[in-house]
Image (cartoon, rainbow, N blue to C red):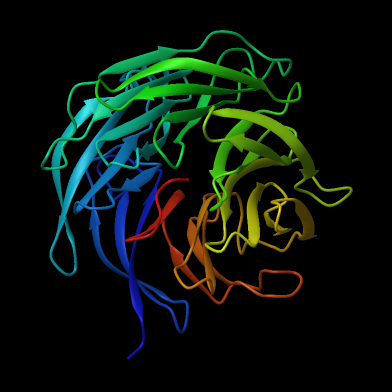
Length: 359
């Protein structure tokens, strides 16, 4: 029997059209087969699955000025095979253009990063998976040297530490990684440490190494990836290494997503513009060596996911309107040519059911 997985996809779509999709993924062929979809949410651009409840969370990436309504977060129950999407409820995201969601390790709290407003919100997860009223909102202030992109704070992700004691917020507008201490009883964030990136770097997403001692940061604006040593007991970061995500003479580009292989041996970063995945070998001490910059199978790779088993990457190519399946290779270039594509309007996010949702 061919092993299959359930994959959830999302795209930038009007509420009148399906923006959420469930698919079967064939691990032998790399083919995605749609089995269900859901309309009713405007721009469900980022998703996270609860690790123990049959619930999917989706942002509605909207803003007051651009859409006439501030952002929100939806909770949807998943049931049956193929799965059906049943909305449980929605809550305000506390700002404009929510772009990233993450759950703390207990699954009791959802963190929301509002890019447009430069804020981070904490929402409690109820027993049935629905979302309660926000317990905290932290607002960032300031700007960076890139006048077009860093005119104000732009919180781009909020990622809890493996033990749930801290949350790292990457603020693209401030060139900062802001570490908060997290009160897991009250659902509140307390400022703990600020680590400045290089001016104009535009920090976007972070991912923890399985050893818990290394953090990798995708810098959107200066097209780099950085390695930080993380002190788990103290919740502090120290930069150790920074490498480019592009080969020499590459076209204009902005970095998007970042993921680490399950065994911690390979790191991947998506390049929008160059339309590639930057591939790095990861040494035993966490250090990075650039391997190659192979094509991503489309245009504007906003988000991607590594399939369980380590054989495939599924890339949401937004401008192509498709999710491409790419084989993962042991030797250079590390990623092969696309073997399959599935049309998804405004493709933006890929989530495997049962996979780690911490990044």
